[in-house]
Image 1 (tube, one colour):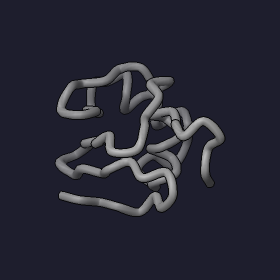
Image 2: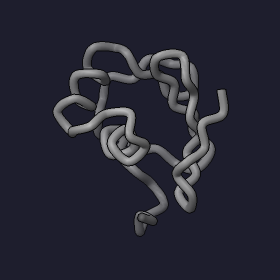
Image 3: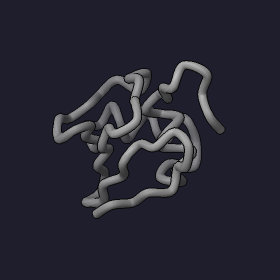
Image 4: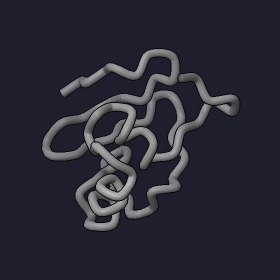
Length: 74
């Protein structure tokens, strides 16, 4: 999946990476303050991510790469 505008919403990213099984679960994780984007807590599930953004949840960090969404980096 390659978005047309080279962005992906945070909630969609969590589902795509298999971090959250559903959009509802992604929403709860984000609103609960469990997700960081570029080392800052992010509570907006509609936050648009771009290539190179780093998403951290449960001690694991994933780098956004819109061409190949399988990069866990830490």
